[in-house]
Image 1 (cartoon, rainbow, N blue to C red):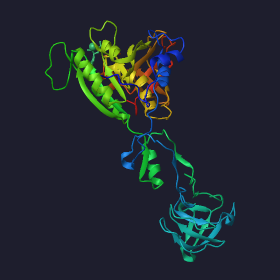
Image 2 (image 1 turned 180 degrees about the vertical axis):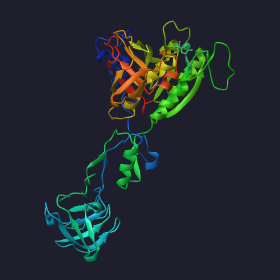
Image 3 (image 1 turned 60 degrees about the vertical axis):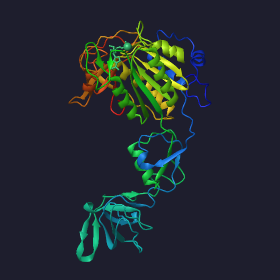
Image 4 (image 1 turned 45 degrees about the horizontal axis):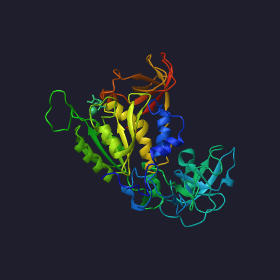
Length: 436
Ligand code: AMP
Ligand code: MG
């Protein structure tokens, strides 16, 4: 049976607990912002029991389970930011030529042995250690080399003391947190970890997410087409979106509207996964068994959300897994995933990164919009000759028109309270890049 007793590390509080905490909501008319707040309260981060330490090259997109304390100063020495000549800043005669005698050459990767006295300089390469006492570098192109007497002449006002020097520890200080627990390991973070000389890193375990599509009319790839049937696209968009989040995915296929098959699928999903995502079968008047089975097997609420596309959604728990029952329409699946599932999964993964900000773009079209619901229109965002962002819609905004998600590069988010948009009005846009 699925409904095993709650584990200590349960990922979701009960709906009742949360409903009690969130006063005054009507599950049949929820605003998008309420649902988002509700889900943040509902799901809890994975307990970090695995304490997994993995090689850096496997850590891309994972979430740090501990602060990373820098074992060294980066850079480890004061060094030159330019190819040029290093000298003592106090030797500069600000408005007139300064002439310095070259006493040697310092290359990156090995310390130059010797001392540089007042009135002298060292030819230096980018990244080479600045010997003690030298604090300023003049780029070679800003001075004149006098080969005959091995001197350089710096014209007045070319550099100031301290210029073109990289200070020891200016990037990272030994003993300070270089990265924080909860940060996702981006390409930049990978590079930063490598710059600290760390070959391994401690990460949260990957979130396991099981998903399946429901509906008698839904065909798996490879099945022969038949009248009235459609190929399953939701499992593929969900797979792609989960992959972008770095989740471990469990694909349970297409499940027909058959109680025993649905029970099996929910059972398998709940036993293996931290979260279960289904699509289809949650709208009103559905002639299928998905809702009934969710109700039977779990602690599930059926919400109607004031949004378009989207609207019906089931949220709750099956066994110890969090359940997201998404609508069936392909665009609605992607939009509800982006608006609700993605932030909830990131929260479960322990990720504390700030979400990507919305941008403002000028609408190149009039848009009809009813106050009292949030609308997500697919948009093509471009930059005009003046450098301003502009957006037009992709055309047909039907919730089944998946091609709009491919031709668009962002969502135009029309807020709950907002009415019609006039030509040239600024609208919020949420770029797909990185998220979808
Ligand atoms: P439902 O919410 O189950 O009534 O589905 C709403 C619409 O989405 C119907 O037109 C379904 O045929 C379509 N749909 C449901 N599941 C899928 C799927 N996995 N792939 C593509 N379309 C789907
Ligand atoms: Mg259906």
